[in-house]
Length: 118
Image (tube, rainbow, N blue to C red; front, top):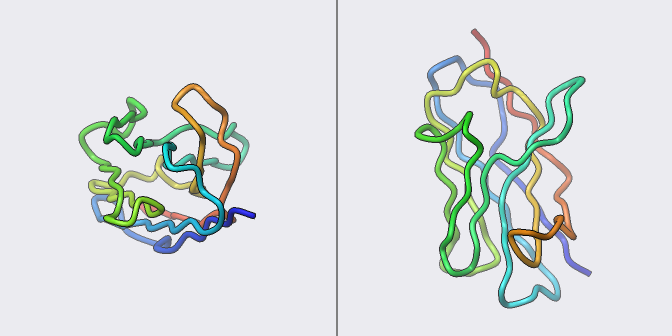
């Protein structure tokens, strides 16, 4: 059983920064993709950023230049550094684990709320 546990959400003013963390435990395949999705009220869940075990990254256009995804030395951790936050970034952020870039995530975290006030 794989579990993903997130931390680091909260309330921040526009222009501020937050850092999200996610740790995976259980039987994790050695080559994988870990990253972050988000879902705002009334909207579909969307990819924010992810990173493969080999270091390849993908970002949504809306966060390029502001957000940075990284993996920890222990390959079962992933982080999202969010800078220059905007009210439009307000959403529940979910950590996700997939087998490859083209695969739908197999495992999800419980979600952490990020609220950006104007």
